[in-house]
Image (tube, rainbow, N blue to C red; front, side, top):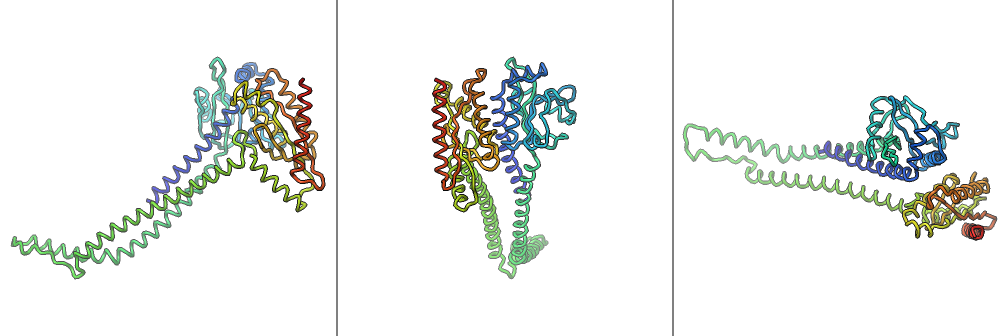
Length: 443
């Protein structure tokens, strides 16, 4: 029973973990493909030349590999038993070390032939493929989505990798805990059962066996006298003892079953409670659409910052109030689905530029950034970079309307005697003034 329970625990927990990883990778691959012009990328592969949209895809992949803590994020295809790069992300750490993005159509022999076969099969499919792969880059759990042009050509794969070592370690630690717990309980029950059997079962059964053997010898005698078919009850009062033994065994079996059921039920209750607690925490502190901090997370951060100010642990910080322009127009004209893409895309730019500061979505079209440390020191340069980036996207007529992001940004700087609320109010006022200037400029 301990062995079966251990196997069940391993299968259940392992399946749950892999399903969670599959959902995460699905979301990432689907989001990237929605943001990618597949026909333009196909032209880049055919011509071997990068386009402006290719460069935008490179920036998107570079940002997402850090945002989602991926092992790798890349697009490739297989040719002549070699892996050919289309577009591969580099992490912030890699870029800090001086590494550059992998060139378009660069080949690699880092994958053995059996691994290349997996990628080749995945390209031909019309759905996302999952498998574990091993190469010179490391051991990973990979999800691959085919890249298909508008003419139906399967020309490559978009792949997202997660390090599988940590996943295996989590599953193995959980199973080891359950195995040890099950073995300890099994040994405890075995010891109790042996003692109980010796005092309550073995003696009565031996006496019962002797009486049964004597009864059998008499019944096989030469004289077929029915009087000889008398069962000599042992001194322990056999009939009552056998009856008690039967009741005790039945009761023990019932108690053991109830105990195991209680253990499994308690384990399931704890697991469900943990999952519900994790889900509630995620929903409370993470915005479901953009995955940045929620309003609740901001309020908590503001309280912490206010406490640090009173304890003089913080001497300088700034607050950015960022408001999206034209969200209502996008929702009314193109639907809320594209409105959500508008919000998520703008948020990604904000997070990319202010990468060292916490970002919060406090309303449908409102974001707050708490500037600290290096981001605060470079606040004016970063704000200028953000305004320039949003100006470019807003005025890029080649984009879809919901990809032409536009925002108004306001800055509030901490001064001696300020509160977090007073700084945020100044940021809001500055944002409002900038928003009015933008409206006048448009007209």
